[in-house]
Length: 417
Ligand SMILES: C[S@@+](CC[C@H](N)C(=O)[O-])C[C@H]1O[C@@H](n2cnc3c(N)ncnc32)[C@H](O)[C@@H]1O
Image (cartoon, rainbow, N blue to C red; front, side, top):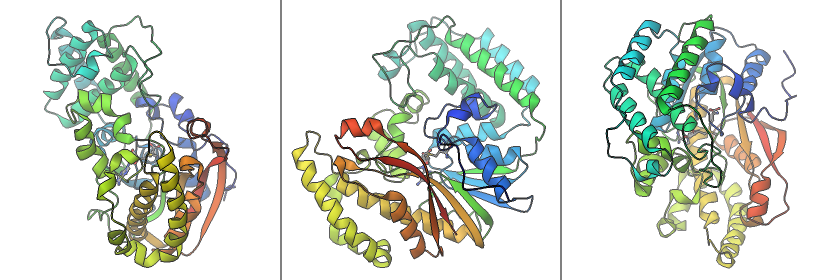
């Protein structure tokens, strides 16, 4: 077994993925390094009979890495946009000639002067010429009847959205104070991306699909994944109070018509995800008595009671702050949601299996929440026998400035057995 306790400090970030074929087909700031997955596969000596479970698939790092090594992996992703991204990233058998034919059709039928019904967010991010090209490409891609061809080109178009905008849109929020200079039109960028993706596929040796993704909320039972069917889990849950995933993907989800407004993002995206930001809920809907009536509280009261004293401090602090954000409620919802995820994970992982979770701790309004440790304790309540925490790096200077605290936040690896 290789040394599984020594990690490069950027292993929890997506930096390595930016220059790795297939992993770089969708730029996702919230991903971890494909090297983490490779290292765990090697260190745990996983073989053909093993299956990895990934409950927060994101842009599919775990699933792509596993497939690359010929190892089976199965996962859930709650966002439709990313579900399609992953499906495209896992299909290495796609017919190159059909893609090239469709690309040629799109070029021939490209509308450059037609006015489409543009979403107003799009108007603020793309030139007029690019807008009509992007919408024309979309119209044509959506009319392709073969699913795998459609998904491949849709992913190329998704990337084109990131690469043809006037302001950077994936860092993770739109940086309107920065402007990108570019020489290529949206279609030329799209074409270049398609060629690059086809080139990557040509280099892949293993083409058999060994990974499978479901559009599913991991807080609930996925009937397609059987009890004890996976040996190991490699995943990275949303960090408490870090990213609002609905907000991060809104350019793409508005463009593809999955959402149209803030309310849509809440109803169609945020509600299907673990509560990770205060935008997920309405403060007045939180009821402490109902909270104490949950299975989570019943099994974890010794963990939750000390948390209540911290959340009370956060609540009092929130009244003094301009945004008055109720991070106290967020903390409570977050751990309840993660309890459900860990319970489902325990059902799926075999008796002598393990789970690796990349996690960040948090300090809303300067009050430290030892997220990794709390989740380790909650894991014991769903049947895991022990947990270990490995610190990967320090993080979160941005939050330090914003919420004016001097606490050192870290990114950790939580290992459950
Ligand atoms: C930290 S990211 C995971 C990144 C992933 N490890 C990668 O490298 O691409 C968390 C992901 O979990 C998804 N997610 C959040 N809550 C979910 C839920 N309840 N069920 C399924 N997916 C969820 C988010 O949409 C996001 O893509």
